[in-house]
Length: 162
Length: 282
Image (cartoon, rainbow over all chains, first blue to last red):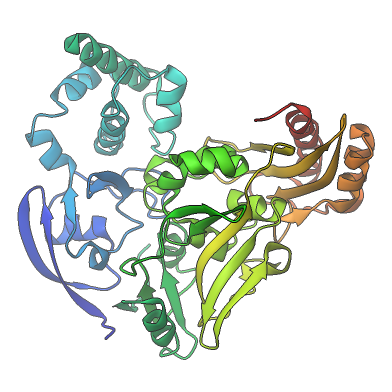
């Protein structure tokens, strides 16, 4: 009934994946080491930095605080899939235009976190934006440019719907 | 770091979980949201032989209001409690606390029962449960039982739960028109564990307050009732209540703040929360 290794079947960025994983393997290590999807980064490994943020069943989670074994049957999306889908092209472009990244380590997690807020619709206040990205560390930008970029995209998307 | 090796089993029911928890000689841990547990495994602060995943168990999540009480299933995610109209209306103290618990990605996954069972002394929900005089539903090898919040938190990360127990739900009294609640905390970064925080409930009593319950977090091994301050506040004297905290609280310094800072913050929190308690609330 209990196992040190588990068979899992899940979809990652729309593709079905079947693997056998060690029970102790975290989701982000599985994505990086087994599937070679290295866009999700490993920072603190205890839920503080947000670099490992991925989507599971449509909601962002810490890839380091979920086990791959728990993702049996789940729908996982990483920055690779979300980027390829084009759904955050405007956000990526705004990050580049406004220097909302420098080294880029936090960027995949920051983009997925920002997209979750933006997908609620409307134009969130700068304070709301700051609260929503509070779980994602950036050690380069000082956040100001990141908030600028997210706010600009929110305004552009809201304007585009009118 | 990476966790030490462990085995993983997915429980099909509460009874199955209890059975599985009994198999590893007391060295199994139930896995709910995992937002604290997996962090401690990654840091190798704990290394159980077996994780029993509760996430597949039906009927353990959801929010219900009945018989003047709000019941929250243990597997209810923080995000669902945060968005719940029933929590906002009938358990407003929990609604006030919710945005302070971790970050968006943490609240998407973390569970109400997990927060209570883990009993981090700096966490918001254990203090809310204590301030509200709530109770905890537990299923164990010898059947089900209910434990009052006042009797649940025993010591640092230590609760009334035994290794084979599964926390199934919490219950708090639904507010009435004379209920007053207040909540405030200081954290270095929004969403981080608090340096010090305060959850409070009371009943309006004319122009004053009765039945004051002050539950501090981040200032001891467990959430801490400040009983002398409660009595002083019921007497209507905020300054006396703040002075009484010296006898109620004995915080140790930690990585976040020194003991002296925490003591000072406790007084600031009490002044702010008292203001909330004195305001008319729906």
